[in-house]
Image (cartoon, rainbow, N blue to C red; front, side):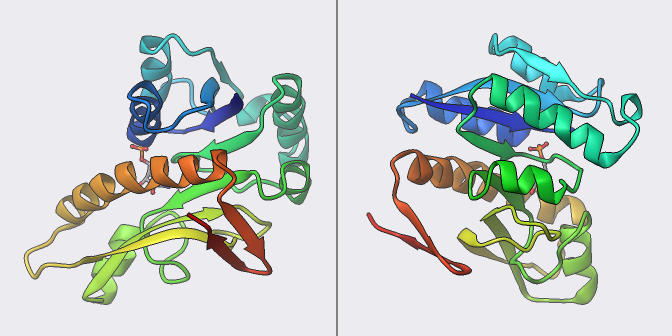
Length: 202
Ligand code: GRF
């Protein structure tokens, strides 16, 4: 049984989608054993509670530096024997030490077709730029901002009447399908990484 920790700063709809995929058996041999947030008010924590999953808040202001913060996270995740760290709207850039502690075992989801529109405004930036196609990306986390090896990616056309909200809603729907799929592939050992490239053997 693979032990997953989910890191979320906000609403947690991706967290919910992953929990649903585990409950329904779409992802087998894995359990979410911890939900971690940097925000006490994150709705993701309420979702964790509803699913009876232990949660922990790590507030940035309780630590003297990013390094100290990440060391506390690493210690917690190691103590919980976590196999896979899933970032689902976790609005923090992790340190190289964190990446090294869980190399190729940290996933993130990003609401654009990386490497286009990295950062915290992926949806709004794509819309403002005027691209006709955007989408979402699941990737392993490396030391950069949204730069790690890409696991799955799916495109979505932008409509002339799209607003940030309408586009975001469609991207969310896509994310809720793609993230459980990527996690399932990882749990079943189907993802091979060579250099920057991920190969899926089904
Ligand atoms: C998602 O759009 C994800 O791509 C981005 O943050 C958002 C999190 O949404 N990294 P939610 O908290 O899972 O609803």
